[in-house]
Amino acid sequence: MTTLILHSALRWLILIAGFWTVINAISGISQKRTFSANDNKSSLFFMIVCDLQLLLGLILVFTNGWFDKIKAGMGDVMKDPVNRFFIVEHGIMMILAWVLVHVGRSAVKKAAPEKKHKKMLLLFGIALFLILLSIPWTGRPNVGRPMMRWF
Ligand code: HEM
Image (cartoon, rainbow, N blue to C red; front, top):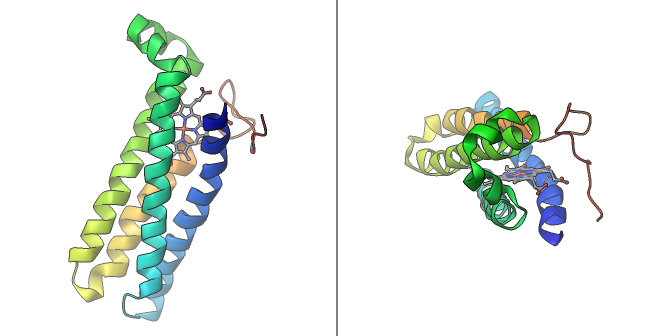
């Protein structure tokens, strides 16, 4: 249960870090400024919270019965909208976002100074978009979960 509470709460830090990074990228492009320590800090924070969330997500898969459902057969998983969402859609999209955040960090590091903010916007922007799309927001049919979990 503690893992689920942490996984639910960490989404807010991820969204703060993601928007902070994307806003830095947009302001960097529009002001034509050089890549700063603040730009580095925001994307590093974004990567660290995504790493933690992946770890918590994997713990949930293995401790909350989801892996037993996978073992029982993907055919049945795909037939049930809740199982399909958490095991396939949520899991895969979030892992893809996590990969993009890691690719983004190294791509920005390697990019020429005038291209850093554009790379930042593209890669972290797509990652944030995938995260926003794949969160089980309250009110989503079948899969909606609380905005903040207390128990
Ligand atoms: C940026 C990444 C992620 C975000 C923002 C996120 C967010 C969330 C949220 C808000 C919930 C609902 C929690 C609740 O019921 O209160 C959830 C559930 C879940 N997430 Fe994630 N998640 C992310 C990544 C992952 C990854 C990478 C995995 C698997 C590898 C994963 C596996 C799960 C599972 C299995 C559940 C259902 C838990 C249960 O009810 O037992 N998540 N996630």
